[in-house]
Image (cartoon, rainbow over all chains, first blue to last red; front, side, top):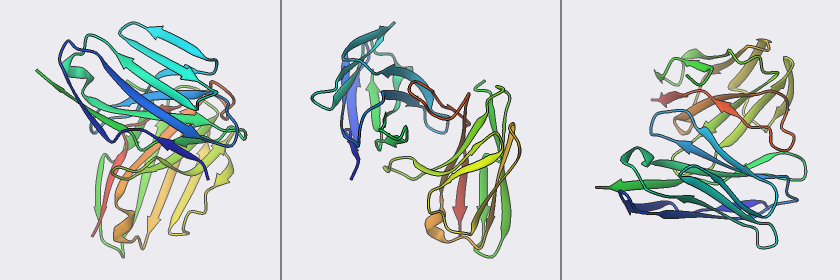
Length: 109
Length: 115
């Protein structure tokens, strides 16, 4: 079967750095997405990786290793507003999106 | 403003009720989706429409009935639901059906409670 694994919950301190990992086992690979979802709100697109390496976008960066079936989302200079759930999703060989259960990130002052 | 609007935001219904969820996208997209989001579980794709035509039904029980009158509007008609159907129902749209880096735009969802 197809599977996406990510930690259920993480806690970090305001101003610090946090890395949210995502590992996947899918039938083929056509890209990996990260979405952010604040409580009670719509998930919003953060990043897309299809080639190995690091993609940087402001305070957020996303890394992909296709050979390891692994990605991470790196958040720097954490702010209280970064408290949210972070969803990892992979497009498989049929271009279907396979979703992880999300990681709830709690930021403490 | 995400460009995708869902109503109502919250819905409480009994198992014998009939209700409908509405979704409207203002982005000019061609594809629309219904997802179910339960606590601590991955998003479950329910239905996909492309240019108003249903392209996917992920073995969803018949008590959920989708309707897509045009590319901008999507409905989910509900009847004789079960308590386990309580969840957040998310609507999403994309420019076209997912190919590669096609990203989804989500609405804020309808939080459904079935009593």
